[in-house]
Image (cartoon, rainbow, N blue to C red):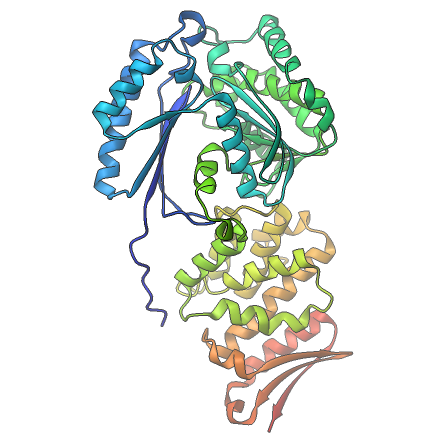
Length: 496
């Protein structure tokens, strides 16, 4: 059995003191795809009074101070190795910001870096690059106090601006936005005249409000995947839906999804800001990013070699290794089933590789629920660097590998969004994994001794004579099912 137990990871805490909320996220180290082991947000509303009074309100600061003291205690109890604490728009734009930071540092025992608008924008862009490797286009990060817009190409930022039009700031004493608010937004966006140079490029949405808009559209359209990261809309779809949300009343929005604090109040204006950006940018498509400033902080601390790693593959390998019965199983499966995919595109090979690393994640579940559990884990995993269609291929392949059927009601929504070719590929991967698991019992060594050989009209499982006992009837039946799906005849070949 896989008896490996990871050593205690180096814990990294990121504390984000924002205009709307104060958040603590603890990660299991500086890794290409770090696991979140703790995540807590408290709505403090530090930015609510900044526009009208020039400083943060006493009640908001008291709430934030109490929250940060709690976070400091949690970090000590968790034996966190490093704390990265940053403050954004509300603190940097407040006349009482410096005094607030001095009190926090004295009481909590950690340093707080007040980010400039440019620094905040750059970190948001790095967060997106961390989640979408080699991406380019424009990032929009809408916080409670400001909107950061960044034109980028990989890790290079070309243009950036921070605009003080966060919905918490603009709606400090309002429930519903007015035409005056829209005028302020349009005047602010006019300062980003460079946006027009990037028309037709992808637009990446960052921030809780814009993620909530994506969530609402997923619900409204009956989209079968609930993961927000990688959710994609055309500019027409995003703009039309944003306009529709901008006309909703807060109480109506609360009946659709759970919205924390004043999020229901600020969401219509957040949607209007999104609509105005889309009108100017006219992007190729609009994508939702689960990563932003906090992940950008981690990413900038990684070595060049670690940054170059594929975050999807690293996550799947780590999770698969932790769940698998025996070591190195995913790596060996990847190579063992490769002959079934001649001429495979690099992007498709990557998704197949991810599926192989996850092949043994449900082995210890009840037999009746193994397929559903593997499928659900793939759909909701905190994976990045993939779109919803790629996620669906992985989920369906795992479902098939645990004897699920593509016609099962449980997966019909996912099957419907896939093209015929993608669904067929997912089923091929799943049946191949199922064959490999039956042949080996989840161990790796038989995969190094046997091989699959695909020729015109025939799929051979080649087994050495001294391992022939492995190729029993159950293996033959699974080989025949895989071969039938591919459209060839299956044959076990015992070699001398």
